Image (cartoon, rainbow, N blue to C red):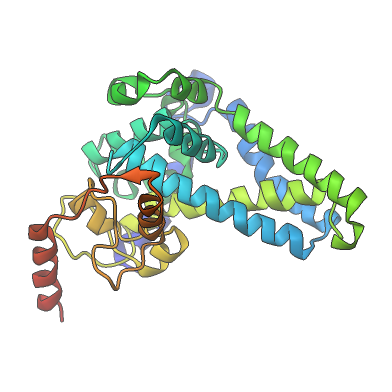
Length: 313
């Protein structure tokens, strides 16, 4: 761990206490709106009573993988950076899948991420470990009152689609539908295939609560740990780092220093040895004709990265 990470960890308590909600401070935590976030975490403990089954655990892993891909490939690389093109229909399909990850709507997500890139690790960056401390950069920032609104001026290109505006305004709709669908599936399986050893609440706990909470924190580490822990191939103006472990967990997002050097690329693992599962998924979708015009990494950026690697001890 770097010295910067150690300093950031010491600021956890201070950063979480910033702002006074009782005075309506915009930096304060909006506690009533945080209740669902806390409830999801508490719901994970339901596994003590529901137990587990191979089906429930497998479903949790599958939902993690599908939603992680929707977040990394579409919420991030497509909606935030326009790194490739797709049809309006497929745009909506993957926006719905991304919304099921309970990370709010595509306009909110893209707007805040574009703001982050415009001000990365400077005072205006709302989830910078350098500026705000580790805990706030990890999750405190999006629980704060000032960050609930969508910065619509940053996503005018996306706001022209009414279906995306609907997903953004009613961001609880898709997660609620997933919750109900998992409960109904569990009830049906319990009645028709009791040998699976599952039930409605078991699927809710594993497929919704546990899978979503793991997905939450796997995504959040890119804002926090990926700006503290790893190596820097490129001399960017921020603290972004490349970290192969985080890249594995987040389907390629851990090549974060690469990404901050050239955010517009459809891939973040710039070289063949940098595992980027989202890039492989996009290549498959391109072969199927679902996406197109995957934006490459410029040759000059790749050559600069190779020279930098040769200079490293």
